[in-house]
Image (tube, rainbow, N blue to C red; front, top):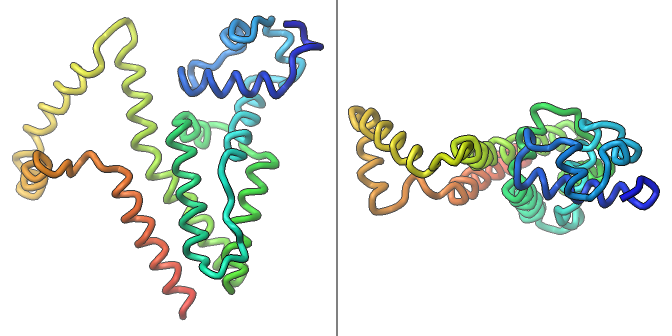
Length: 224
């Protein structure tokens, strides 16, 4: 595909697909060119360089998130919708977590999201400082909760290189870790409960629990 028929939107869309499949380390202009049947030089014309392409891809993903009405009577429901939308986007695109830590990220969709987030709290009567802190706290909470699942995706991808069986390696590591943890009484009790309740297999439940607690704290501060 020649550079005059290739568009930035096509490049960014293909980059997101590649990132979802291969992660941040798997993104390169050569692989992307093969996916688009285009020379790498044609893509540089549209996106400048790889770092800028990652920035554009991240901002495109921010645009996937539905934004709640900041003037809704219930600020807490709006904040929960906002946080859940962020969490789901990070779950769909695990490479975003790594990109947050390694790239300079900005763009119109991210700014639109941030503007909406601030409006939720300002419309509810939070002053500027508390609105800033609430938005930051929620963002960091969501990012932190998304780190575990994203790391799991990256780990499985790395363990499968060379045709290795990631499940076998993970099972062996889990057996060894369980034996070690079993020598500590509190951990042993949770391991025993996990056999019947899935204690360690419910990240979404942990996310909801933590988000409720965080919003409780933000609400309590507002009431002061």
